[in-house]
Length: 202
Ligand SMILES: C[S@@+](CC[C@H](N)C(=O)[O-])C[C@H]1O[C@@H](n2cnc3c(N)ncnc32)[C@H](O)[C@@H]1O
Image 1 (cartoon, rainbow, N blue to C red):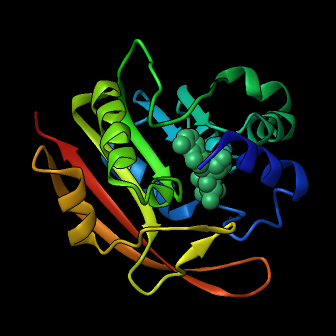
Image 2: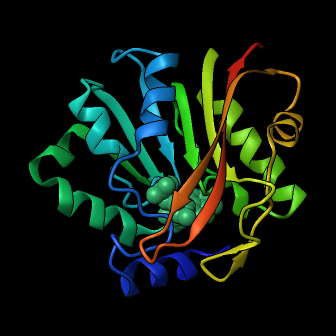
Protein backbone atom coordinates (compact mmCIF):
# COMPACT_ATOMS: atom_id res chain seq x y z
CA UNK A 1 0.00 0.00 0.00
CA UNK A 2 1.76 3.13 -1.15
CA UNK A 3 1.34 6.85 -1.04
CA UNK A 4 1.68 7.04 -4.81
CA UNK A 5 -1.14 4.53 -5.34
CA UNK A 6 -3.56 6.48 -3.18
CA UNK A 7 -2.52 9.89 -4.46
CA UNK A 8 -3.15 8.61 -8.01
CA UNK A 9 -6.59 7.31 -6.98
CA UNK A 10 -7.59 10.64 -5.47
CA UNK A 11 -6.09 12.67 -8.32
CA UNK A 12 -7.68 10.56 -11.06
CA UNK A 13 -11.21 10.07 -9.71
CA UNK A 14 -13.96 12.43 -8.67
CA UNK A 15 -14.43 12.03 -4.90
CA UNK A 16 -18.17 11.38 -5.39
CA UNK A 17 -17.51 8.56 -7.87
CA UNK A 18 -15.20 6.30 -5.87
CA UNK A 19 -16.85 3.00 -4.93
CA UNK A 20 -16.75 3.75 -1.18
CA UNK A 21 -18.45 7.15 -1.55
CA UNK A 22 -21.25 7.93 0.90
CA UNK A 23 -23.27 11.11 0.66
CA UNK A 24 -23.86 10.68 4.38
CA UNK A 25 -21.80 8.65 6.83
CA UNK A 26 -24.89 7.78 8.83
CA UNK A 27 -23.74 4.60 10.57
CA UNK A 28 -20.32 5.97 11.47
CA UNK A 29 -21.85 9.13 12.90
CA UNK A 30 -24.44 7.20 14.91
CA UNK A 31 -21.83 4.85 16.37
CA UNK A 32 -19.51 7.74 17.25
CA UNK A 33 -22.34 9.69 18.87
CA UNK A 34 -23.38 6.63 20.88
CA UNK A 35 -19.79 6.22 22.13
CA UNK A 36 -18.94 9.83 23.02
CA UNK A 37 -20.43 13.29 22.91
CA UNK A 38 -19.24 16.41 21.07
CA UNK A 39 -16.50 17.12 23.62
CA UNK A 40 -14.63 14.00 22.50
CA UNK A 41 -11.45 14.08 20.47
CA UNK A 42 -12.17 12.16 17.27
CA UNK A 43 -9.75 10.99 14.61
CA UNK A 44 -10.89 9.61 11.24
CA UNK A 45 -8.06 7.36 10.07
CA UNK A 46 -7.84 6.91 6.31
CA UNK A 47 -10.60 9.48 6.20
CA UNK A 48 -9.89 10.42 2.59
CA UNK A 49 -12.48 12.83 1.26
CA UNK A 50 -15.23 11.32 3.43
CA UNK A 51 -18.07 13.64 4.45
CA UNK A 52 -18.09 12.19 7.96
CA UNK A 53 -16.03 15.18 9.03
CA UNK A 54 -18.67 17.64 7.77
CA UNK A 55 -21.29 15.75 9.76
CA UNK A 56 -19.16 15.68 12.91
CA UNK A 57 -18.68 19.46 12.70
CA UNK A 58 -22.41 19.94 12.14
CA UNK A 59 -23.11 17.75 15.17
CA UNK A 60 -20.95 20.03 17.33
CA UNK A 61 -17.74 17.99 17.57
CA UNK A 62 -14.98 20.55 17.85
CA UNK A 63 -11.86 18.39 18.28
CA UNK A 64 -11.73 16.54 14.98
CA UNK A 65 -8.73 15.21 13.08
CA UNK A 66 -8.47 13.52 9.69
CA UNK A 67 -5.45 11.39 8.83
CA UNK A 68 -4.77 10.01 5.39
CA UNK A 69 -1.76 8.73 3.49
CA UNK A 70 -2.85 10.67 0.38
CA UNK A 71 -2.37 14.43 0.43
CA UNK A 72 -4.69 14.63 -2.58
CA UNK A 73 -7.62 13.27 -0.57
CA UNK A 74 -7.09 15.79 2.17
CA UNK A 75 -6.85 18.64 -0.35
CA UNK A 76 -10.18 17.49 -1.78
CA UNK A 77 -11.86 17.46 1.64
CA UNK A 78 -10.39 20.85 2.52
CA UNK A 79 -11.66 22.34 -0.72
CA UNK A 80 -15.16 20.99 -0.08
CA UNK A 81 -15.22 22.34 3.48
CA UNK A 82 -13.92 25.79 2.57
CA UNK A 83 -13.38 27.96 5.64
CA UNK A 84 -14.72 25.15 7.87
CA UNK A 85 -11.55 23.22 7.08
CA UNK A 86 -9.80 25.47 9.61
CA UNK A 87 -11.86 23.71 12.30
CA UNK A 88 -10.22 20.38 11.47
CA UNK A 89 -6.68 19.14 12.11
CA UNK A 90 -5.32 17.47 8.97
CA UNK A 91 -2.51 14.93 8.99
CA UNK A 92 -0.89 13.38 5.94
CA UNK A 93 0.69 10.19 7.25
CA UNK A 94 0.75 6.42 7.05
CA UNK A 95 -1.46 5.00 9.80
CA UNK A 96 1.05 2.19 10.35
CA UNK A 97 3.72 4.69 11.37
CA UNK A 98 2.06 7.91 12.53
CA UNK A 99 2.98 9.79 15.72
CA UNK A 100 0.49 12.16 17.33
CA UNK A 101 1.81 13.54 20.63
CA UNK A 102 -1.72 13.39 22.04
CA UNK A 103 -4.57 10.94 22.59
CA UNK A 104 -8.06 10.73 21.13
CA UNK A 105 -11.34 9.44 22.58
CA UNK A 106 -12.56 7.94 19.29
CA UNK A 107 -10.50 6.21 16.62
CA UNK A 108 -12.67 5.82 13.50
CA UNK A 109 -11.60 3.86 10.43
CA UNK A 110 -13.89 3.01 7.53
CA UNK A 111 -12.29 1.00 4.75
CA UNK A 112 -8.61 1.71 5.43
CA UNK A 113 -7.66 -1.05 7.91
CA UNK A 114 -8.93 -3.80 5.59
CA UNK A 115 -6.13 -2.99 3.10
CA UNK A 116 -3.58 -4.23 5.64
CA UNK A 117 -3.25 -7.80 4.43
CA UNK A 118 0.22 -8.22 5.91
CA UNK A 119 0.27 -9.19 9.60
CA UNK A 120 3.29 -6.97 10.31
CA UNK A 121 1.46 -3.94 8.87
CA UNK A 122 -1.57 -4.73 11.04
CA UNK A 123 0.68 -5.00 14.09
CA UNK A 124 2.22 -1.60 13.32
CA UNK A 125 -1.23 -0.05 12.82
CA UNK A 126 -2.31 -1.41 16.21
CA UNK A 127 0.79 0.03 17.87
CA UNK A 128 -0.09 3.42 16.37
CA UNK A 129 -3.70 3.06 17.48
CA UNK A 130 -2.74 2.15 21.04
CA UNK A 131 -0.34 5.09 21.22
CA UNK A 132 -3.13 7.45 20.19
CA UNK A 133 -6.30 6.13 21.83
CA UNK A 134 -7.06 6.97 25.46
CA UNK A 135 -7.78 4.13 27.89
CA UNK A 136 -11.58 3.96 27.97
CA UNK A 137 -11.71 5.41 24.46
CA UNK A 138 -13.52 3.72 21.58
CA UNK A 139 -12.58 2.25 18.23
CA UNK A 140 -15.24 2.46 15.52
CA UNK A 141 -13.97 0.19 12.76
CA UNK A 142 -15.60 -0.60 9.44
CA UNK A 143 -14.28 -3.08 6.89
CA UNK A 144 -15.61 -5.25 4.11
CA UNK A 145 -17.57 -8.12 5.62
CA UNK A 146 -17.15 -11.87 4.95
CA UNK A 147 -19.40 -11.54 1.89
CA UNK A 148 -17.88 -8.25 0.76
CA UNK A 149 -15.51 -7.76 -2.19
CA UNK A 150 -12.05 -9.32 -2.15
CA UNK A 151 -10.49 -6.29 -3.82
CA UNK A 152 -10.94 -2.54 -3.67
CA UNK A 153 -9.26 0.12 -5.74
CA UNK A 154 -7.14 -2.56 -7.41
CA UNK A 155 -5.80 -3.81 -4.08
CA UNK A 156 -6.58 -7.01 -2.17
CA UNK A 157 -8.33 -6.62 1.17
CA UNK A 158 -8.78 -8.74 4.32
CA UNK A 159 -12.48 -9.21 5.04
CA UNK A 160 -13.77 -9.30 8.61
CA UNK A 161 -16.71 -10.60 10.55
CA UNK A 162 -17.06 -9.12 14.01
CA UNK A 163 -15.28 -12.11 15.60
CA UNK A 164 -12.19 -11.81 13.41
CA UNK A 165 -12.17 -8.04 13.90
CA UNK A 166 -12.30 -8.51 17.67
CA UNK A 167 -9.61 -11.20 17.61
CA UNK A 168 -7.40 -8.95 15.45
CA UNK A 169 -7.70 -5.96 17.76
CA UNK A 170 -6.92 -8.14 20.78
CA UNK A 171 -8.05 -8.60 24.38
CA UNK A 172 -7.54 -5.00 25.40
CA UNK A 173 -10.47 -3.97 23.18
CA UNK A 174 -13.86 -5.03 24.49
CA UNK A 175 -16.43 -5.47 21.71
CA UNK A 176 -19.54 -3.47 22.58
CA UNK A 177 -21.45 -3.32 19.31
CA UNK A 178 -21.56 -4.30 15.67
CA UNK A 179 -23.59 -3.75 12.56
CA UNK A 180 -23.66 -5.26 9.09
CA UNK A 181 -24.49 -2.83 6.30
CA UNK A 182 -24.99 -3.13 2.57
CA UNK A 183 -23.25 -0.20 0.91
CA UNK A 184 -24.47 0.80 -2.55
CA UNK A 185 -21.65 2.12 -4.73
CA UNK A 186 -22.18 5.09 -7.09
CA UNK A 187 -22.59 2.59 -9.96
CA UNK A 188 -25.22 0.60 -8.05
CA UNK A 189 -23.21 -2.40 -6.86
CA UNK A 190 -23.78 -3.75 -3.37
CA UNK A 191 -20.90 -4.21 -0.92
CA UNK A 192 -21.15 -5.78 2.52
CA UNK A 193 -19.50 -3.77 5.31
CA UNK A 194 -19.11 -4.78 8.95
CA UNK A 195 -18.91 -2.13 11.66
CA UNK A 196 -17.47 -2.92 15.07
CA UNK A 197 -17.35 -0.75 18.18
CA UNK A 198 -14.75 -1.54 20.83
CA UNK A 199 -13.86 0.03 24.14
CA UNK A 200 -10.22 0.13 25.17
CA UNK A 201 -9.87 -1.55 28.56
CA UNK A 202 -6.19 -1.05 29.33
C1 LIG B 1 -11.43 3.07 0.56
S1 LIG B 1 -10.86 4.64 1.04
C2 LIG B 1 -11.98 5.06 2.36
C3 LIG B 1 -12.03 6.54 2.63
C4 LIG B 1 -12.97 6.97 3.76
N1 LIG B 1 -12.63 6.34 5.02
C5 LIG B 1 -14.41 6.69 3.43
O1 LIG B 1 -15.03 5.83 4.07
O2 LIG B 1 -14.92 7.35 2.51
C6 LIG B 1 -9.37 4.22 1.91
C7 LIG B 1 -8.61 5.44 2.38
O3 LIG B 1 -7.53 5.03 3.21
C8 LIG B 1 -6.38 5.75 2.86
N2 LIG B 1 -5.24 4.91 3.25
C9 LIG B 1 -4.86 3.74 2.70
N3 LIG B 1 -3.82 3.23 3.35
C10 LIG B 1 -3.53 4.10 4.36
C11 LIG B 1 -2.54 4.11 5.38
N4 LIG B 1 -1.63 3.14 5.50
N5 LIG B 1 -2.53 5.16 6.22
C12 LIG B 1 -3.44 6.15 6.10
N6 LIG B 1 -4.38 6.19 5.15
C13 LIG B 1 -4.44 5.16 4.29
C14 LIG B 1 -6.50 6.00 1.37
O4 LIG B 1 -5.74 7.09 0.91
C15 LIG B 1 -8.00 6.26 1.25
O5 LIG B 1 -8.30 7.63 1.42
